[in-house]
Image 1 (tube, helix red, strand yellow):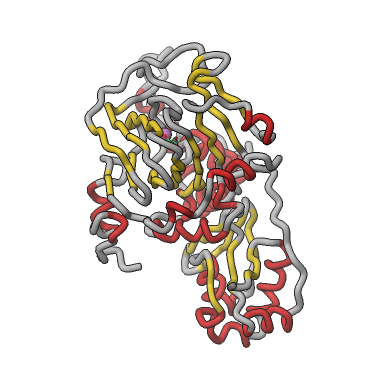
Image 2 (cartoon, rainbow, N blue to C red):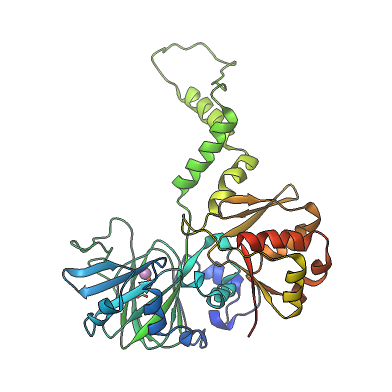
Length: 390
Ligand code: SIN
Ligand code: CO
């Protein structure tokens, strides 16, 4: 994707313009951005998914046993039947992990790297349903599915913003409304981190949240320090060969603090150590206990599948990234470095940069002596899988 091409689903902005003027800064409303996405999943499909043990689902009842009651899934059909007529919301996280064709929509945002993407959450609410006025720490593209939702946007918030007590939800006491629009099927609303928002279903409605994530710097620091400690061991001591005589032996001077700072920073200031610490961390799957389901093939079977029109898909629940340091690429999936022969580097990077690839896009690699054997290993682990096109 050319970063300067106008994108209809961003209201004609290019990726470059969107990132410069809106991303992490201000909201954006685009009418009819994804008309075909709106009907992708019915409320019934979502309720079925919310019955699965492995799916992360929640119900929020504005007028439950307590105000803004939170219930955690999986749910039973009986529980759904017992819900009131209005004022509740069902939310299911990571629906893209279950529906690869839904995860394809993330390609529209591929101008932002995979490691910044969290998941696609889908909510269903009857009239009056909402999760309350709140703010999120992360960027989100809210895409209206079926029905209509009235969105109000307000002030920027942080941990000091007063919150409603007596509910596990992070609902803010007051939203100073500056934007008030009703969204219909396919409309998109980008909300930057920290901006208060309040979406109330006007009728039976589904909302798709393409959510991003950003690592807490404290968590990154922890990993970087761990690697720096492994590298330094406990033998490396503070050194002060250029010490000058002090008149104030009781003082820990600014000069000494500066020398300590510099020597500590030099332990951390190491790009190789940073990559070793951060790349596996940022490639960890969303769900810690997630194990992909692989399938065993031999090279011939894979070649035949491609000839028959199969699509190669990356497992949507796995997280994949690569680094290129000193011209040397390294691949990380679900927290582990995945080795590959140097001769198939371009093949591996092609796979890591695409959610799905057709045989035509894999070109000569299908005949390459090392590419398919490597792919067969990955199919067995489940990082990629073959999908036949209907
Ligand atoms: C919803 O889908 O109801 C809530 C999405 C959000 O506010 O982040
Ligand atoms: Co939100």
